[in-house]
Image 1 (tube, helix red, strand yellow):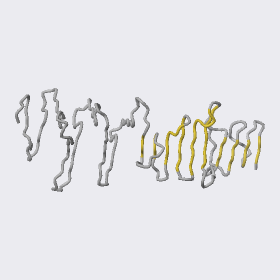
Image 2 (cartoon, helix red, strand yellow):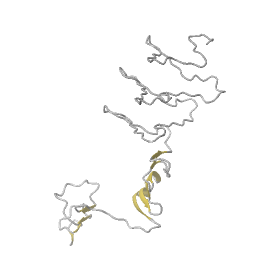
Image 3 (cartoon, one colour):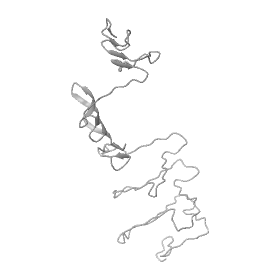
Image 4 (cartoon, one colour):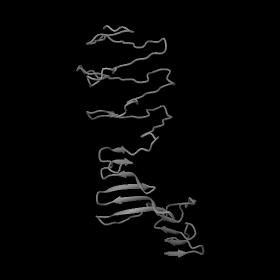
Amino acid sequence: RMRIDSSGRMGIGTASPGCAAKGVHIKTSSAGTFPSLQADADDLVIEGSTPGITLLGAANGGGMLAFGDPDDADAGRIFYYHVNNSMAFHTAGATAMSIDATGNVGLGDTDPSEAKLSIDNVASGDAGLKIKQAQAQNGLLIDQNGNSHAIYIDSAASTGDGIRVEASSLTTSSAAHFYSGGANTSTRNLVHIHNDHASATGTTALYVKQDSTGLAADFNGGGGIRSASGIKFGTDTAA
């Protein structure tokens, strides 16, 4: 039932422990052909059809797996809190990721109760979220079935763009495309631009700059253009 060979390998349930020297190999059943183990992960081997490890803690406690070195005994940690059924992942001694009881995930946010994924405390110079897509598919797909905003941006920036789209390699299609195929006849806008402050008189609601000889704007529809204050062209100051 237990065997220690001449290299100090301990086998429990196996007479031929496959762990590292002075390691432990626990076998509850055969998993099949024994592979060559990763050299940095062969000190403890648990073999079975569905092997597992249980950390059984008190209802008011938790369970922790620590990763240490001579300078810090728990520089990295995985901790499960039974009190609120949450899990925390620590790196460099600080919480890097949190998962609450509802499955909400926080990156840099220890209380991700407001979103399924919450990202906070982004380091200076880093982007909050980066998606690099090399396939001919959507880089980001939002399937919004609820009656609310599919994308909501609350920007406190005073000089940066709220939304910026750069498509320097574009040859066909559009840099931004707004489409609605619904047959509903109720009044609605595909694009709604609203400057909600009467004192912001220097604000241009829509600015179009065309550096080539192509059209600056092309309106293709039977509804025409409506303006409550008239339309100004070129340097004209009168409507």
